[in-house]
View 1 (cartoon, rainbow, N blue to C red):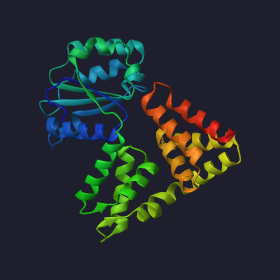
View 2: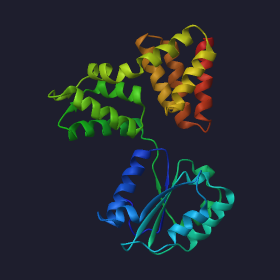
View 3: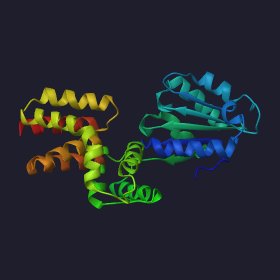
View 4: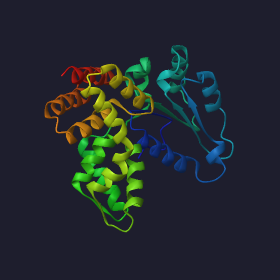
Length: 280
């Protein structure tokens, strides 16, 4: 759990579900359940707010409690001038304010590393494959169910490792299976698979027709709707595995490893593998 005593906390990573859970717990711990929950809590966005606006609010005494909680999402999107103002504040923060900085990409934080000694840094990286598997099994158990290993693998292939997406689909599966105590692979296929079957089929068809432009356009549309590159790899893998396209599956598995363990832009890797699959 994130310490309630820290004046400035920096969240780094893409796992927004865990970040939101941490913020929820901070709100409860710092502000309690009274009117301060709303009056002494505010979210700003780095792409929309200025440091002056944010810091004026942070420097104002709490309305009703002893503490206030201020969150800056996408803090890396602040202008360089605003980042400089924020860094100055971090060195001497208001004692009654807990400031949470939320960044997905640490490389875009600029000079923030110079004030890390003043900050509590917490990493919320994407789950590993084994962590996602354990989380799915624990979630099922918390609802009085178990889940087949095959069902877990299909769910990961379709949804990726994003906890927000996995939570939504697991809630649906719990309701879908009703009184059954076991979530089976067929349940995932029927409920979750049908949501993506059309998209996966269309992309697979474009690849088989060697129409890279169409395949890239379909992938781009899905990414605009929130799908990440590694999730797209899982979607393609699920589709091609059903068609027993081993050579293409091997290409996707290599791309998946490249996304996870190299410094190349994940979107570039995804687009490159789409073109390669169309040419192959």
